[in-house]
Length: 117
Image 1 (cartoon, rainbow, N blue to C red):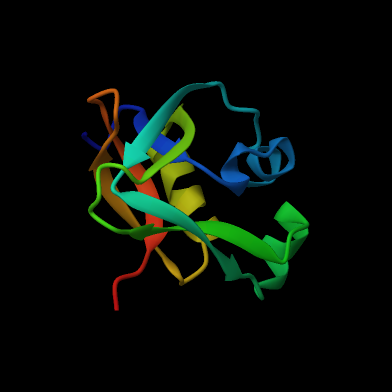
Image 2: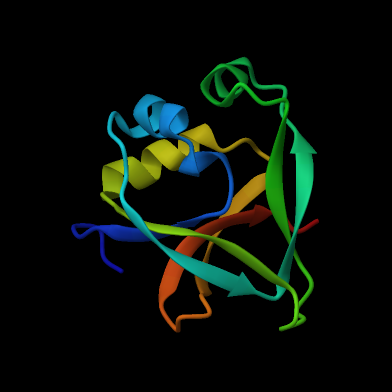
C-alpha cells in the first residue's frame, strides 16, 4: 500500500455510520462485506466530545486480539484516500491503534484494534 493510491480500511463500528462518514470524510463511502479472524469485539467508553458528537454514542466497538481463528468479526471494507485515512486516524481515540491485517477474503486492509498494553 503506497501513499498515493486508495487504501482499504476495514470497519466494524462507527465508521460505517453515515453521520460519521459525512463528518469525517465529507462523503458517504461504498464498501464490501468481509470479516477478520482472530479478534473479538468488545466496547470502549468514549469521552472525546468531538467523537461523541460525530457518533452520538458513548461506547464504541473495539477489537481485541485472541489469535483464535474461530473468533471472527464482520464488517465492511472501504477504499479511501490517504487523506481520508489520516482523517480516520484523527477520529479514532487513543484506545485504538491502526494495523494492517489479512481479512478472511485473503485481502489486506487497515483496521483499528485495541492498543496492546
